[in-house]
Image (cartoon, rainbow, N blue to C red; front, side):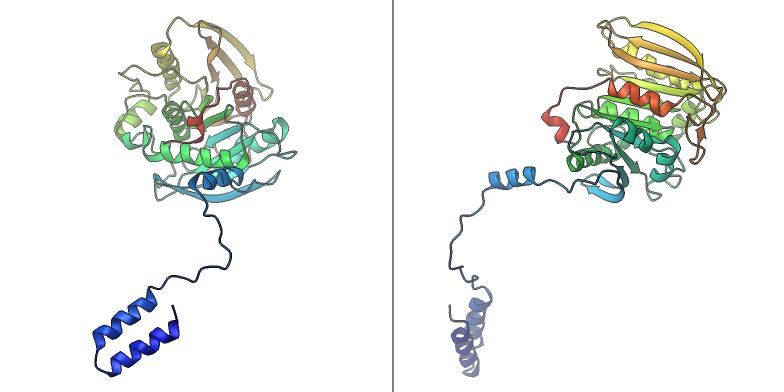
Length: 354
């Protein structure tokens, strides 16, 4: 189409008091298709687009980097920090998702647990989602609300989507992804692992509450105070292998809550469990009792640590972080020992779905 010729025609029609015709001519000009390139190119198919996306995923973080970013999906948004260990990033490394407790931040939790140092030593990626004050004034994960307790809803859905996002960026090993947390973060970790069993191979809970029929703040407070058991009244699905730490002097989340993980395992297990009890003293001076529970095939399903004399603190953590007890056994190292011995069969569901 000759743009100038069309414009002149429209102007002439307007001068002859034919505004409608002039408008039609101008409309042709505005809606005219773009000029075709001299060389035709074959249009890209949807299949080619998907392949291109798969071959060109998110930028891979540099080795030894600790980055902060924001993530948004259809279920909500979260800030997060992501640590990639030193050394080669060519191999497909395990990933550990760490959920902080109330009043903590992702950075504070990283310092207190010293997970990044272990990541350099053992070779795994660490993802730290961070709760926003706009979602909870104390930065607690809202594990006690029903819309944050199930698959495809609320915080579990956002955390699962963020985990997949980080797995794609870092090329993490989908068979070796784990989740852990303390206090409200521990309760949330148990919920997320139960909601997305195809994504997580194992879960770690420090000073938290087991998955149960809790739907209000008052019920949550009763469970935390040891006055109500967080117990499910419905049949539970197969449990993820779980490691639990709890101080027997915890005055924030009553130590009796640790028993809820065994209750859930017994309810979900198809047969009897075999147990073993060990006692010891950490290098920092704290005594502890460690109980292990295996299923009929001999697989370790639950490891329960009671830290004697410890309160509501990450056992063996750094003094530079909040809510830590440096005198206790190293919960971070013990969790990684437990985690890295667990793997799940990779599946398409691990890479997508809500």
